[in-house]
Every structure is written in C-alpha cells, then in structure tokens.
Amino acid sequence: MGTKSWQVGMGVIAMILSMVLVLQLRTESKIRATLPTRQVTELAKMFNSQKVLLEKYEQDNQYLRSQLKDYDRDQEVARLQMLAGLTAVRGKGLRILLSDRSSKNKLKVFEDPALAIVHYDQLELLVNELRAAGAEAIAVNGYRIGSNTGFGCAGNTILVDTKRIAPPYRIEAIGDPLNLKSALMMPGGFVENQIVSFDLRFEIEISDLLQLPPYHSIAFEYAKPFKETKQKGKKQ
Image (cartoon, rainbow, N blue to C red; front, side):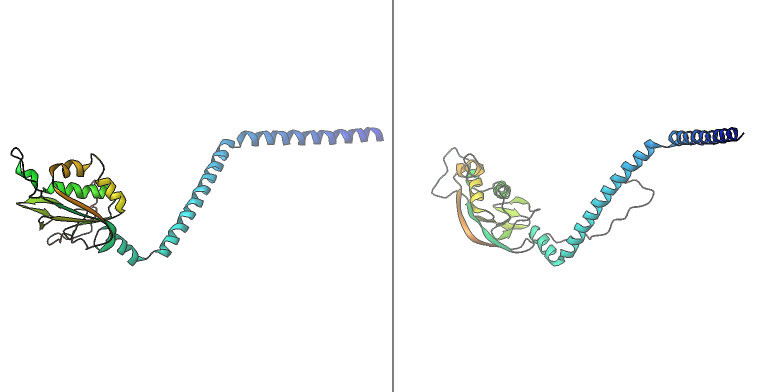
C-alpha cells in the first residue's frame, strides 16, 4: 500500500511537471509568433540614424556659437566695404599708360584714322583683362572702377560711369604685379592684338605702392529700400 501511494504521488508530480513544461513551450511559441522583429530592427536603425544626426547638429551648433563669439561687426562691415570698393586701398601692382597713336607714327594713306585713337571698348577690355588676371582694385585716371562700372563713348572722350576722361589713360591695378604683367604681355594676347598692332601708345611698369581712391557708387535719388512681404493666398 505504501509503495502504491509513492508511485501515485510520483505520477501526479510527473504529470504536473509535464503540464507546466507544455504550457511554457506554448507560451514561448506564442511570444515568438507575435514579436515584431522586423519593426524592432527598423526602429533600432532609425534610432541610430537620429543619434548620428543629433551629434552632427550639436557639432554645427558649437561651430556657430564659436563663430558668433568671434564675430566682429565693425570688422565685417569694413571687409564688405572693401570688397565693394567703397574704401581707399593701397598695395603693389601695375601702372599702365594707354594713349592714342603718337604723331611720329603717321597714318598710312589706306589706314582708317579711327584706328589711331583709343576707343572705349579697348579700355574696357583692358580693365577686364586685369580683372581676369587677379587685379583686386583698379582705377582709371584716378577714378576707381567698381563691379557695376560701365564704359561708353562721348565724342572724343570716354565715359566711365558718368565721368568723362580723355587720353592719356592712366590705369593703376593692385595685385600680383608679375602675374598681371605676364597676363597682359602674353604673345597673341589682347595687348599684342588690340593695342600694339595699332601702334597705340602703351607703357607698363611695376609699382611697389599704389594708392587708389574709393569707388563713388551711384546715388539713388528716387529708389528707396523696403522689406518685401508675401501676400497670403497668392502663389509666388
């Protein structure tokens, strides 16, 4: 009788353990079946990318803060004025003299008299050649050339913006003098083809110190600045 009770007890215990094991296996299977593994992986990737982006924004923020800390308003204004040509400048560069053909070089019978004088487009192209060669500031007959300066013809004189100038034309250009001179005097270049070939007077020399006046920009008498506002309901 005692042996049978022991065997029955062991059987009951074994049955309970088996039921618990089966229940645990079923629970794990359900969890594995319902767990969104793909979604978790995507969320992890999004988290990592956002973390990297946040670190980048923090670095940008630190850089902007350092820039703001070192920002000097007066120095920035002075730099912009210099870029616009609104301040007098000095430095090394070239002095150039351009003028009409000398009376010693008389026109031949078949030559057009207009070829013996300097035209506004020749002066303008010479200025452009200097700019392309790296000139940082240019003046013609003491008048500073700006980014919007225009050249034109006014009878026997040349118009630079609204200023009339007459020959000889004295051009001063601040920049690397060797580079500027090499660019102008290169064989087959503008000076050789458009100035020297017409026997126009052309002289060039290097200067260690040039002083150029500021550019007198056009004064606005009628135009006034205003802040533009976008109107609602209208497509821009």
